Amino acid sequence: MKHLFGIADLTRQQITTLLDLGESFIELSRRSLRKTPTLRGKTIINLFFENSTRTRTSFEIAGKRLSADVINISAATSATQKGETLLDTAQTLAAMRPHVLVIRHSVAGCCHFLADYLPHTAIVNAGDGAHEHPTQLLTDLLTLRQQWPSVEGKILTMVGDIAHSRVARSHLIAAATLGYHIRLVAPKTLLPQQVERYGCEIFHDFDAAIPGSDAIYMLRIQSERLTDNCAFPSVREYHEAYGLNRARLARANPGCVVMHPGPINRGVEIATDVADGAQSRILDQVEHGVAIRMAVLTTMCGGQNYDR
Ligand code: NCD
Image (cartoon, rainbow, N blue to C red; front, side, top):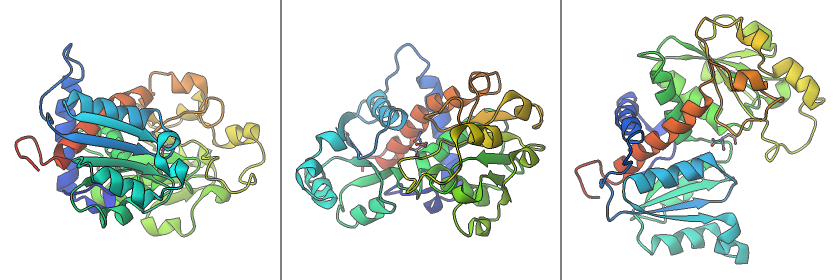
């Protein structure tokens, strides 16, 4: 693996290998000494052009727990504020010879684009527009692995702003590779066109999609990507129609888990008692995010015993 652009580039075997490695790093992150020398001498730059708490921090902690030198650059502090293009910024950083460049940007496909110009740097996509978010997807799979030995045949019901969600897109691709079923629940205004081609079930009525669900995955309304405010009448009505509350959750399969990539908007897509309830795996996802990013960074640097 030279780069990680999206889940679409990974085979079932590569996904399993990353999850195995990620699982071993969960244990490391619970020790009192949370550090291994695996990436000593490696340099990782996190280049984030969109706001982020968990993904950026998680990449930073992952790199530091592996003993890499980690540098963080955000849109506010980057030279793009002075008129430099994204390509010039990326080429400038690559000339400093980092081993890995982790990029988050609002433009779909920007990692593919940059990779052609940066032959010596591994690129990891930390979310590119509404395209893909592979490390979130792997994080979710690691969380589901704590639940069941395999996701094959399970029903994952994703609810909310599917149209703008790179997380949903990565799940639609992964479901085809790994054999789980996706139910998408959203008003028509928040569904991408021709989404049926992914082979998922589509619902506009949340209540109809709940029975049989093994996991309910809530998504935030991505207001920063909505071009108008006409996707739904009001937050109150959205919550009534598409919010996950206790009564709805009670109608899913016993043991159904609740997931969310964060940031959560309490009272919009999810009720507080569900977000904090026993079936919620939202904070487990955050914990597993560090472990999976450790696995990805290790792999990008050539694995545990090999120098890139
Ligand atoms: C998601 C993202 O940025 O795509 N969050 C994340 O990375 N944890 C989803 C979101 O922003 O709503």
